[in-house]
Image 1 (cartoon, one colour):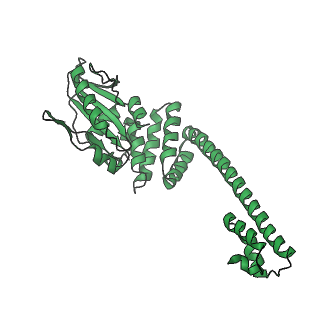
Image 2 (cartoon, one colour; image 1 turned 180 degrees about the horizontal axis):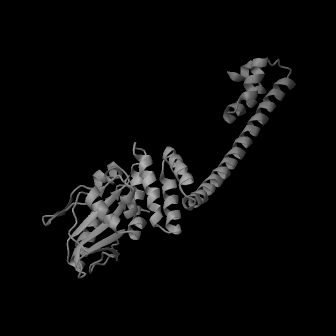
Image 3 (cartoon, helix red, strand yellow; image 1 turned 45 degrees about the vertical axis):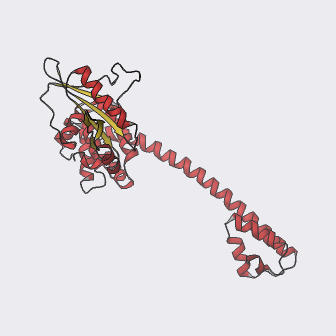
Length: 297
């Protein structure tokens, strides 16, 4: 989804490069998402997740920014990432940067390690983890970069400023069409932790019918899914409870048929047991014990 946000608004990549990775981009006139094919006369095709190219007013490429999303360690990337950078640099004849957006600090630390190419040099990826994504609580900035506001709201959801980031993100929705509002809200609702999700529910249901419709559609789906899961869980629990009761009744019936005295405590212990393995063991013992209490030993 992060790549979809960049495809919708390539300036997010530039903002992350500057504010999260700490690299000042060169002067440019346009930022566009361009072909992600990083093959350069090679037998294997290499495709980056996204490539944003900064060009001057005459269309000359000033910087090619390769954007990758990485969720886990993958040793093969340390061989393919240099291909992305060098092949794109040769094709566009401009400087290149490799920025990797990571879901955790541990993965980011792995990604930003220097890649040794051999005696000829090195390549160092720029790793961006959630804590490095800029916090956006200013509505003006959020409206200018709504996709970045989405990333900010997710990255800082559990911080003290989390609610303010969510409010700024909702303000930024004024600049979007209905389809993107629905897409982004669903994405955020799915990814937020429980407390932050409740905050967002409160915000969207008190802000505007426009957001409320999109949120209601998501919430109704979420509630229905929860209802179905709850129903299935309830049926399973009911079946297990019914089977346990049947086993317990069988134990009591065997003990009674053998003329063994069943104390109230023994009766209650058998009747309340829900452990199927234990109940099956008691059924077998009920046929051979000399007293009802012996089934427990």
